[in-house]
Image (cartoon, rainbow, N blue to C red; front, side, top):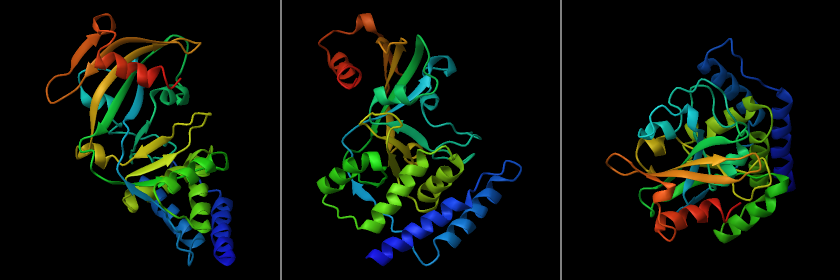
Length: 279
């Protein structure tokens, strides 16, 4: 066991020491192939022990955009992942998008670098079309969130050996690092090459709600669908004011202004549950 842990730790350190960076003068395929070669060299004979949870999900997903960036508030695609994303992110290579979201709308606001005084946002709420479907989730973590990881796998009845934990911690720490080149490739390898559905990773701040990078295929094939859109204004002291709610279905969405929402209605209670109780 100790030997196995040493092997994975050595492979991880070898990969980190490569100090790889995405070469913008080369093609996307060149960069991906270069990373794969270097990665396979570092982990040769180790076979990274990827632990995943296959489970049902009983929570929605929240995604944020600035209101001023929306061209058509009735278009579902405005709230989805960017189809033509040539910018590298924490968990996406250029032109290899993922659906970024969180389990809490408050976390999406806190995570956004775009948060400014009196900013207006649209926060979309997505859900599984079939709640009985099981998805394959990679539960990454860092030293700061290891206790959450341990509680999660214990609840799901999963036992993780130490080398699996070392690898998942490595992925989590890379995703939260400033070197997007490494984290983007590692996420690409999990989602695009190995076909996992979701990478769950900790919030940058102190939020208990995790962030997620979801395979775009789950959006494209209708496994995850848009449910509602909350149009809100956030002040500099983090006071959140609801302007309107858009209810999406098969037909054109229905938009309801805040003043027309009954205080004790299901819409109002759901909004308070997500935006007020989680602050």
